[in-house]
Image 1 (cartoon, rainbow, N blue to C red):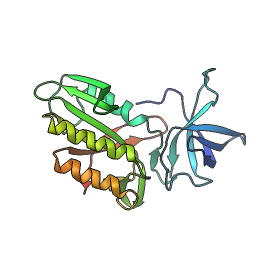
Image 2: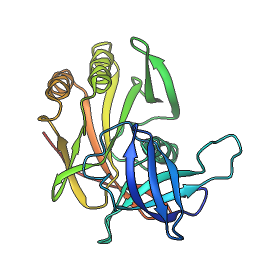
Image 3: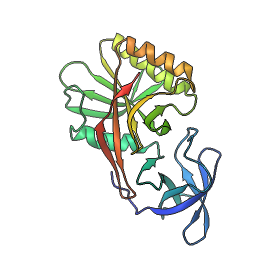
Length: 233
C-alpha cells in the first residue's frame, strides 16, 4: 500500500489525548498531527522521536497532517496508523497473497456478526466461511520480538470470544497479528499488560481458533505485507 501523499519527516514534541501529536517540521514549524492509534504506543512516543507525517489538503479535515511512521534511525520503521493493516491485508487477500488461509473466492470486509461486532474480513468459498480478525502489533520490549497488546483491550478479548463462537457454529476463525515493525521476526502476547486478553486467547485457541502472524515491509514510500512469522504462545 503506497501512501497517497509523500511523507515528510518531523520530530515528536508530545502525544496527547490519544489521537493528537505536536511535532516540529524540518523547517521549524510546530504543527498538530492526527494520531490514528488508540493504544498506549509504548516505546514509540518519546519526545524527540523522528516521525513521518502524511500531509493532506482536504478542506474538511481540521488537521493537515497524519502521523504514519516512527523512524528508529537505524534502518528500521514502525507503522503507527492502526487502519493500515486492514487496508494492506485487504489488497493481499484480494490477490490471494496470504499464506495459511483456506481456499476462498469472496472477500467481504466489516461484516456484522456475533453480538454487535464486525469481523474485519469474511472469506467465502469452498467449505465453511472463514472469519478473520486483524490486530496491528507495534510493541517490542525485547530485540526481535513483537508483543500484543500494548494496553488493556476488553474489545480485543471480546473479539476472541466471538471467534470461538464462530468455530462452535461450524465456521473457521483466524486471529491474524500483523506486525507493523521491521525489526521483529516473531510475535507473542504481552500477558503482563493484559492477563484477561491472554486468558481469552487461550480459550479461543483451545476452541479451535487459528493464529497467523505476518510481518510488514515499511518505508516512507509504502507499507506492504512481508513474510509469515512465528507466533510464540
